[in-house]
Each structure stands twice: as C-alpha cells, then as structure tokens.
Image (cartoon, rainbow, N blue to C red; front, side, top):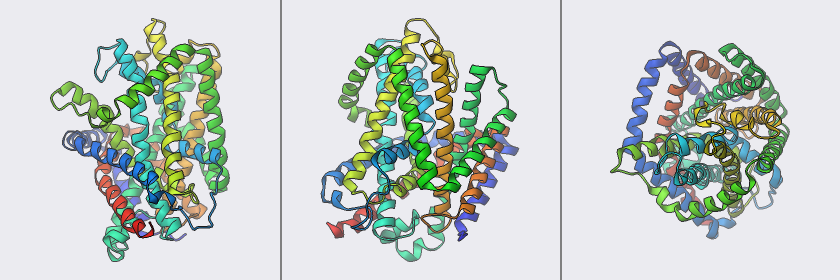
Length: 490
C-alpha cells in the first residue's frame, strides 16, 4: 500500500483529538475557543493581507509570461472536459455550503447581525448579499487557485511527489523536506483535511436529518444521523473504489445539473424581478467596495470588529485550513491546462456561480421575511432553506432536490477527501490504492460519528481554524518556492 510515516502520525493525532472531544468535549471547546479568539484578535490583519496577496498573485500570474506555463508536460492534454472540470471544482470547493449557506448567511446578515446597517433596513438587505458573495467569491478561490497551481506545477510539470513538502524543496532544500520537517508539513495537511471533512460529514448528516424531519417528521436523533452517515459512507467508498475518472466525475456532473435545475426553478417561482435587480446591484457594490471590504477590520468599533471576526476572518481561516485538501484535488483534475487558463477557470467560474446562487436563494428568503410571510431568521441554519421552500410553488419538489443535492455533495466531498488523503499518505502517489482510500474513508466516518455523539464538533472546527495559522505560512512559502523555480522558464 506504500503507506508512509505521515499516515501513522496523522492517525495518532486524530485519535488523540477524538478522545479529547469524547472524554471532555466542554474542555476541548473552551480551550480551542480561547485559542481561536486569540488568533482572530491578534492575527486578523495578517489573514486579510495573506488573502489579498493571493488575489494579487493570481492576477499577476494570469497576465504575465508565467501564464503560458503548462501544468504538465508540453504534450499533455487536459484529462477532463470543461463541464466535468467545473463540476468537480464546485463539488470539492463548495459542497454542502452551496445549498445551505446560500440561504442562511444572507438571512443572518440582513436580520440577525448586520455588518454596518440597522437590522432589516434597505442597506442591511443589500449588504447581506454583497458580503455573502464577498465571503464565497474571489478571495477564497484565489487561495485555492494558488495552492492547487503550485501542487500541480511541481507534480505534473516537474515530476515531484504529490506532497505539500515536495513543493518547498527548491526553497528549503531536499534534505530538510524529506526528513522529519517535511513529515510535519504533510502531517499538518492530512490533519487539516481529516478534521475539516469529518466535521463536514457530521454536519452534513445533521442537515440531511433536518431536511427529512422537516419533510417527513423523521426522528432527529444521533442514531438516525448515524444511519445516514453509514449509508453515505458505503456510497462514497463505492465511488472511491470506482476511481476519480468515473465516480467523482459522474457524481459531480449530476450534482451540478441538479443544483442548476434547483436555482432555475427557484428563480422562476420566486421574486424574479427582485432577484435580477439585486444581482445587478450586488455586482456593482461588490466591485465598488472590493478593496475596502478586503482590508476592513474596524479597529475602533468593538461590535463591528466582532462581526468581522465571526464572519470574514473566520471564513479566511476556514479557507486556509481547507486549502491542502481542495488544492490537491483541484490540482489532480487540472493536469494539462496552462496557468492562465487554470486561474481564469478557478477564479471566474466559481465566483460568478456563487453570486448567482447567493442572490437567487438569499433574495427569495429575504423577500419572505421582508413581507412578513415567514420569520426565517428564527430557523436553525440547517432548516432555513426548507422553511423558505414551503412558501413557494413546487416547494416540496425543491426540498427533495435539495436533499438529493446535499447527499451527492456529501458523497463527492468525502470521496475526493479519501483520494487526497491517500496521496498525502503514500508519498504523493497519483492513484492511491483502493485499500488506502477505504481505510481513510472509514477513519473519516469514525471521527465524524464519535464527534457527533459527544457533541465536540465546535471544538474540532476550532482546531481547524487554529491549524490554519501555521498552514498560512506554508502557503506563502509554497508561492515563493514556485516563483523561484518557475522564473527560470520565463
């Protein structure tokens, strides 16, 4: 199976974290929450600058001579078509968030906690969509693009192992990166992936359970969620067994089709003109306030700074912690594309789609609350979408489609995670053995189940945010290493 030391290091750390969460979940939550708050307060400025730097670097690489470099050998052609490629980008990078936060986040910004304006005001409603698109747009995808680009360049263009540590060899030296220090770097990447995906599996099970409860009055218990998790585990292991070219590609394509049908249906039966007007306004506000939002920290306003900590800095740290997983997966499916083509695809397509999704879902939900039809701000995050659907024609059908989309996103996220974990723990093998992927699939589900049972999901998520701080330094080093190596070709 070619398992390396990184596998065992990561498994031991994950077991220790799970036992901590199982034995003393409150202690885990308290310790990690304190650490997370410290990071937000002391390093918020740093996260802002790192993310902006990724956007600047993306633009530079796309318009400069670097853009001509191919992520592969000269005669390598892209392995996947544009539709399949875009579908897999979304399945790995957005996943379940595409369905749930497109409703819940705008509602929160407009009626629960606003970035600037009075709750429920016109400004609050307009800014709700604007900041949602800001959080899910260029900033997060620029980070994914740089990490994926560097991994793909060294793996496919230079023939290096598919490891984070391998990308740092030109900068820090082969001896250092192939020894204990390199193992630490790769273990951090594996840990971030396991914890991030396991917490998502736990939340995904709870969200599917909420949908079934809302529609069919199904029991909302741990055991019912465990059944959902077991079924999903069997399905994503089956998908992983069939390989990336079949399982993930087909499921991702199906899911983007379902998600597109869902957004078109809601656009048609919802407040269509309101959506179009808001989309146009959001594009203008997003572009016009892009720089200000990118650097805004509100140092003189404690209340507004807390909002930025809770949302913007949280998202930036969250994207950084997910970067090794999403970056490696995007790298794997992007072989054969030029840097210019790659960055344009990874930055523009997801941002445009996210703007459309957030506007359609967010405005449809906001319109109901504005007109006193439904108080969606009183709903839990995992049920607000279903609460919105019941007030529109074809609501039950859209709810069924939503549960189906969540389930497929659930499977594709876990499937792609087992693939990435397999690569990281087998010295970067491009196609890890099925046995290794299955082991990681069972580890992910076991961690998710234990954390769900003992209620330690918040503590585990906090640990992911904490892991983002050291990994942000690794991302910067990766970018410098790439520039040092690639400049010899241009």
